[in-house]
Image (cartoon, rainbow, N blue to C red; front, top):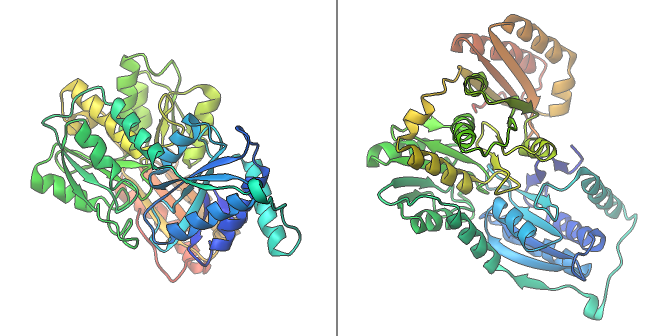
Length: 458
């Protein structure tokens, strides 16, 4: 991770950690340094529903224009739609303005290459070098004049083409299926309903009234409780919850039970294997995925590999090894035939495809894979790097791992986007998991790493 960009872009409190000046200078650098595919640099920009997204959008566009690049605005849209438009319409770069599942006061800038993938670290390092150099008065970039100045173009048509693409992927009619959609007051608020209704579903939408300040507020993929209640109360067949930028999906079965990314990987992998779509390649998961997923896939004769946490690492492995399916427990699922990034709405369409082809409920499909008890604690800390390098924390982690040997496993890692240490324990009993987490948490507290004495759940 760099000074500004983490594992999922440049993220911080809007107008404090991430400012309009940052956005302007990122635009200036990209407009001047990206290789132009069609005469001049063309960059497509999308944003989520945060109030600060407008400020950052205009600043990015101004920076690009000042360096002679053209900025195409998709307006409010999803991260995967930006990736799709970038790669299918020959843009030199895609930019998504979002802080994903974070609170509305945060925001972020995600950069994508011409293939719609996360931008490579070498270019990110150069962006950071320029941000530091300009801030210190070190250097600026050339300023084109006259016809060399770039322009900003309304490109809502690109978002509409993405919606049409999603609709085209529906192999079955959703007629007579009652679907709940939790749009997290985010980027999916207008797209998800349009797609599902075009495919014939009867939809009941919640959290689809964004006001710039309610994105992810007790809703969406991180807080699906309202969707669970909706599915139960309205006797719906299935529910899908998206996060702020709609690159992840968490499902709710007809009984109101949460179906996370591990179950999605299992049921889609089994279905794709039977259809010959896995191409003899392994399913790609992360170290946070449940052991129950690995056992269930093994039983079906499906290989599985693990990467570090982060959909960029999942995609990188998939790209290198030609894998068809990969994802995270959090609901980032990548179908490489259709997308270069996690796509929550696409994932929901594929889950519907499995249900309709099997002519059975989501709960029955998920019953085939039993998951182990797993607990996650997110511990806000003052300095995540200092906490992870503390010898006492390392010793406590090693002691817990020895205690877990043969009965459980423990993962302690720093978040790539927040000042948080994530402690995950998984094993034969919930009591053992609690004991393992408590032993590491106690040392974090004793050494003064925990911020304000707050420990949050998953």
